[in-house]
Length: 217
Image (cartoon, rainbow, N blue to C red; front, top):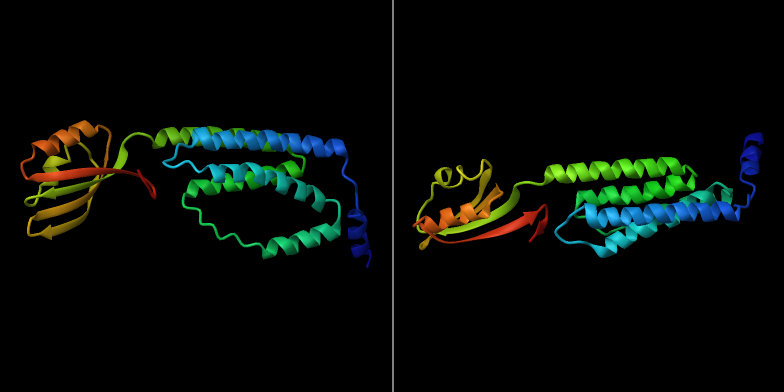
């Protein structure tokens, strides 16, 4: 019984000072706006999702205030645990990088709610630096799907190897009019590729589709 009494005494409806609430919300506001612009300008994506960006900016406000309330009242703590256990999110996250931003929002809310502002700020800065570096490293040769209709079989070792070291034939479709190819290529200079295909007498027509993960441009 003494254990339960000590727990109840520690959660004795402590009032949260107004200055603490204001300082918490100001820090969360700054970090949320910071994350908003990082997602908007640092993470270059094929299709910018404004609704998702607004969501990750608002989420830390709810989480941080929940964390503060959980530290003051045992009834709220038990109620929040029960309520959160019933919540189910069914929206699919297509891009794995978006999971980082969701976790970042939750992290800001939890750490700021525990009043560890310096930890939240320093971690956010380090995460931004890593995102910028990894984004720069991922740039270079762009991935494309090359669709070719030819009159006969093509030797892609002679056509594509001088232009790119990485290509993969995804499908061949043989018809009475010739052969249709779908090839995944990664290349920087499209003009060299298009000139080479235009000069090839076996190539009737071709098209290029740029894609980024699951997004097709």
